[in-house]
Picture 1 (cartoon, rainbow, N blue to C red):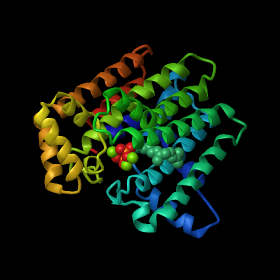
Picture 2 (cartoon, rainbow, N blue to C red; picture 1 turned 90 degrees about the horizontal axis):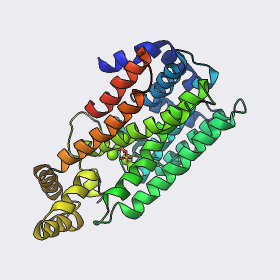
Picture 3 (cartoon, rainbow, N blue to C red; picture 1 turned 30 degrees about the horizontal axis):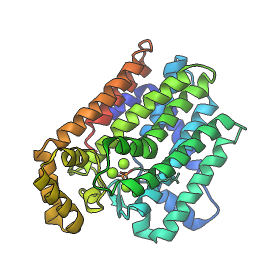
Picture 4 (cartoon, protein in one colour; picture 1 turned 90 degrees about the vertical axis):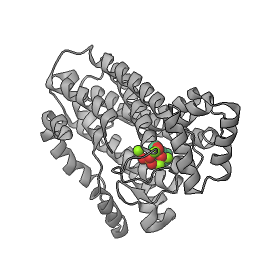
Length: 324
Ligand code: 2DE
Ligand code: MG
Ligand code: MG
Ligand code: MG
Ligand code: MG
């Protein structure tokens, strides 16, 4: 299994991280513990902490330290907070194949759980007076919030441009992966140029990652999230943006009408999905995703070979090839 192969050079670190991460979420409030236990029992692939450890080890020839662990826990706390809030914002009842927190406990509890996890992350980041970490993470939180709001402002507009789409996904998704890679490097080589190189590397992967996520909305049985919801919510993503920009006047009218007036009608959503597929929307998005992937791989190639670099290469490819 590819994920096991990627994890192999950081297996020890990921195990220790797991223990630290669990401790980092504890609270005196029983309801909080019940819900955070629910979340960690349905954990994802933990790609973000993997990036933190792999980058740290690549730039330092295998060394990690307390700052690396703290950074990985902070990132996973913040990431968990954003997913809990994201499902409220998107009104989504599924996450990773299970009910979302808002589906089981309602929005008000989900909002507070997210706030709690966010505060835990910020507090942990200054546990050792590590203001560099606090800064990296605070910038990521600011950008994600702005990205989500930019999406609300722009992504429902049927004339949204590709550039605005890239700005949205850079802010809402790529910044956190950029933060993973830059803080991984900063934890072991704080003064080096690797910090900025790795930030850029993470940003490029993050762009590819969100394009892939948006492609999943066009269908994949395995992902554990509903498909077609972006279209139903009239959220324009790259496949649809491309097709809208290349459709004839009549087709465009039909598309807009389908999305606008029939956006709760499953049959209409299926027709839009079919049109996007038939008109090269998915192919175009895949092509763009691969461009970001290649740029990321080029940055990686400025480093000497190591098992950590090989794992990062596998991870870049996994972001694009994953089935969920
Ligand atoms: C995923 O997009 C983007 C998530 C960013 C969420 C950030 C929020 C503001 P998707 P999926 C809500 C920041 C909140 C903090 C820091 C607590 O396409 O398909 O909706 O996985 O992702 O639902
Ligand atoms: Mg969502
Ligand atoms: Mg969202
Ligand atoms: Mg999505
Ligand atoms: Mg996602």
